Length: 214
Image (cartoon, helix red, strand yellow):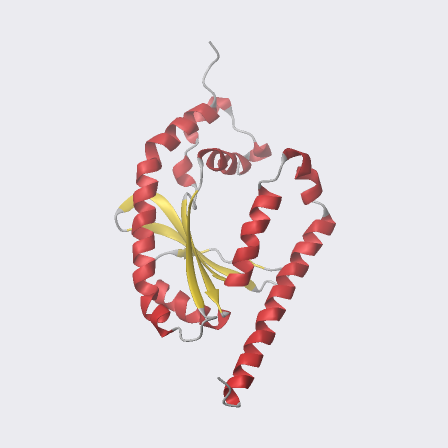
């Protein structure tokens, strides 16, 4: 009988902590929805949207994420007890998609009042501009599981959902292809185009409003 690997022990831990992860996510979602409800009620135009996506990292993704953090991206079997999935910051997470992005500031401000002690770890672009406002910390009802929430422009967030499946979790035959510099360039071009679209759209809406258009 082969000895248990580090991965085996972590998979067992995942099963043990999964109920805690679910409870933490339920609390996080409830508090986020309550905090942004006043903003949601202010939405008037049909195109204005606040959408919440919730996610629990699955077992294999969690193990792989912890493995990638190790030296050489490998676990040391002699230090098996040193590894724990509860060190991950995003076992439970929410993403708040905002359109138009002009409301991102009010959303992040509302959430910062609810989670004043959470740490920031924003996603930045090549020019160090903030693409997504990201925060992590513990919910009041659970000091074991670290949760994460993001506030993201909706167009970027929806693109990331496609990108995640195509680039970060692709068919094994495509792993090398998706990491090519040309693919990264195309990804940056898409993000820039989505931002430009929203800027232009917002300007046209404001111009129409100034003319008294419906």
